[in-house]
Length: 557
Image (tube, rainbow, N blue to C red):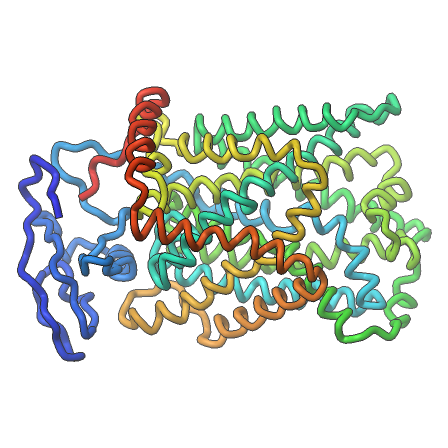
């Protein structure tokens, strides 16, 4: 391996051969306490003279050990977030701007997305009554709580930026990690952000123009969506700190709107105009077991989004405390709010209206809110903005982490030299997103591609099990019961199977969308071919560096 010129305090130590599975020899005072027994040891590693094991915190040692992953040359790879600074070279890394309030805003702003206002009808009709519907909301929230606990454990132990990509890459295999990059580029961030932008523009413009009885043409709605997408991406390029502050503002506004909606239902009950909920609980229609599974498939995605906090783990202050607390509390709050919302709709709307195809939020607003009807429309717009903002956070960090591990173009691993923002990754996602505004029926397409939405969470749950088995001595500041990963894996499998049964065509469409990732991984990552493409990308990267003022973190060893 070629060493960088001028680096004098880094030396190569020894060669490690095959050892039996017993306690490994101490070859470095800085890593001796973390070396695990294994049959094949790496050929060499770097030892930094300035490293002092007595001054290294347990969380830092755990991060170093958990991220150690042999590559094809049997080299030990030290984690980028824990590497030592080389003398004379500047550090260029994302600032830690996410405190506990920001963590709560990211999670609470992502869960209870706008889809809850459109899926209440489906959940209620599939369950056959109010009582079973509320039970489905509770159980779906409980399963997401279990999944969030699994994410919190492994993220608190590693503490690296990159979310699902970096957790899968470090623990399992590069191939499924590369699939995560592909999904991010294809649908995870790009297509989802476009769908949310269209939803925002539709409801926001309706608030503005409802007094005049006007509706914007479709192409003008797309123009508004494009402007809104450009503004959000521009903010991500300008300041991560302001992105975090915006998320707090949007989350507060979102819960204020939810509180107004629930208060309107309470007023309906006090006045005496509400539906008799006791009779609604007693009336339960007979349903098949397939309907119950379909109700779970409709309700569970409403609570997804808590995993987006793990993508910014390297930018979180006190990651071992803030991530477990915010994810645990938020995933407890979300099913409570969902149950209160469903009860509010059931108290105002009749059984026939709850099972109709018209979104319940529209019917509820016209009947119970009067002059406050724009609040309901504002809630949809704010929820769309919250989900879009956190989705872009997750997408840019995925590309950034992938480039740092040589799994994607190095251009994505660069930061703005002054603002320390993910400008290359954000501009790439925006460039892919904009043409998608021209696609009609985009919502149906993303619903079909969403058949694989439970695949990455399932792999992370598997990674929790593998991480415990491979690194049993790693310090884990937050640890969940051993049964949690197995429960969540089973839940994800059931959700995926039910989705395929509901949408048989989704299997073919998803496979067509995912399968290109396999040959691309083999050719671009493993074989590193064709060389002409890599040279062209290198020349383009040099040009874009000068144009955008972006650079690598030169201070990493």
